[in-house]
Length: 127
Image (cartoon, rainbow, N blue to C red):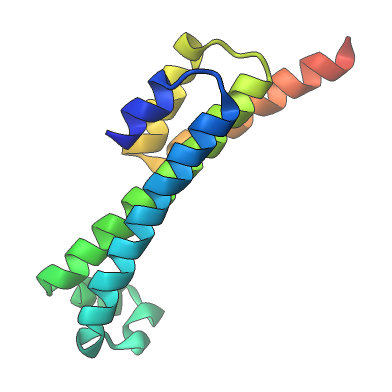
């Protein structure tokens, strides 16, 4: 739902920013609640190895926290991608695939965004 709003909201940056931060804020609060209610299950030493991270996800609460973590950060990244590409003049139809990749495969979408944005900025400054 948040991603749909990000795409279809009017070009009014204040409206989009307000709704985006409200969405990110809600996800951040939900994440905090999940983590704080399950903190006794966390062993912070587990973050130092792949095997340790895998063991963290044996708990349903840890999986929920991980999922909310991804949703929150990927959406915030999507907001940034949308804002910067709009500012660079790229039409929404060309932004959609980049936003989809950012939603589904966060870092891959960010890599595409960085390439497209860099090319657009270089072309704009060359004029």
